[in-house]
Image (cartoon, rainbow, N blue to C red):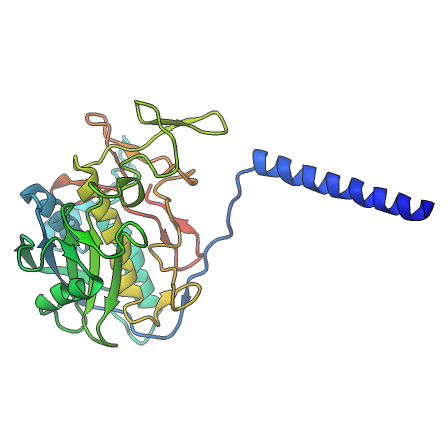
Length: 335
């Protein structure tokens, strides 16, 4: 009995030591997850000139439509303006200009080329824009109705039909399960993307980091005291509206997924029924040093205080999510 008692006491001591070590580690060390490995599953990707048509459903202001259109036109710039955005002499004095939207999209193009089969890099072409005030289907939409709206655009196979719903439109599953989705009606057919404006419904979930994140407490100045003693602030929207700038973030990630995994057998990690794609494998990462609740160090406009990490057409500034580097599977941050 005495030997058994000594053995039990030893077990208790070992357990206490292990538990105490684990607790200290969690408090003092920020967990860094392993690099996401995005695999190619042999299926088709979208290549070459990818026509994108957009339907604005609901009460979208002209400014909102212009912000989205300029973003899409910035993905694959052509001509003198696009060339001018990417030129820089690294021997010249002064800081390098911010990365462009086109440079960010270049990572998606690398995925397409890497797939082999002679795939040509995907170049986005804004084919059309359509306004719909929402009277025909009402202000509440099912996912099936969203797909019907996408089909109304008449996009050919190899193209993308984008449906954007305004803040006054409620879509089935919005906020509770998704900020947007992409899919296709048939293998090899047209691809559709839906994104909702979350400014009136769930800005802390689908418009972060331009609104206080759900689950965190902020003071009146928008600051959150972090456990490590730092004070962070959610960012001001670069185009003056958390709703439309949140739409751009989600649209960017979903377009990257729609091109690299249009029919469910392209690039993703995990289960094909719930794939983690190139635009979603680095969640919440926009700048260096990002962690849950903090987007990372990004550029800040000196005049407006708005946060951004890329520039596009007409000098517009945008915040885009980090994509997974196809060569080393790290989160590729625009710096």
